[in-house]
Length: 166
Image 1 (spheres, rainbow, N blue to C red):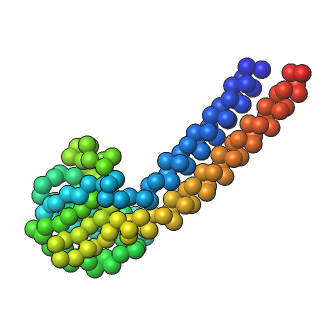
Image 2 (cartoon, helix red, strand yellow):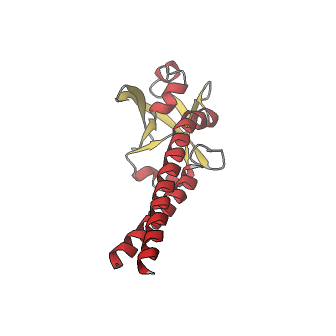
Image 3 (cartoon, one colour):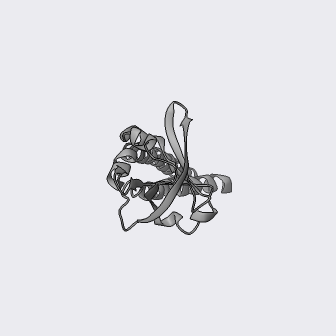
């Protein structure tokens, strides 16, 4: 019986945790100038790579050992020729989320949420937010479905348990 109670409580905790996670995901695609920090750097080199069939980029800069990562989601929404046109020793301005700033120099890479030069805006915060909104919407919907299923299973087991105990 103790095992049954433990499992019911565990199902409730999991469903509530998943619902909490949904609220955390909600703000991922809402980056603003207030939630990000702009940094100036000089390009050392740019590497193109792939995640499956999707292209992404890593930019090495002279000022930091941390590589700047441009995700496949962003690359599908922007003109990647603008990234190819970037030159070694060119000055760039990029933004990262404030929550990553303290660990920025200790990280091997960080996802950037905007990129520009003094002449051209390569991708903006708006572009970034739009590029990941589809993925976050899917994650929220799937997370909600799974949370509701766990919650319903917990309720059903709680009702059955109460009937057996009564």
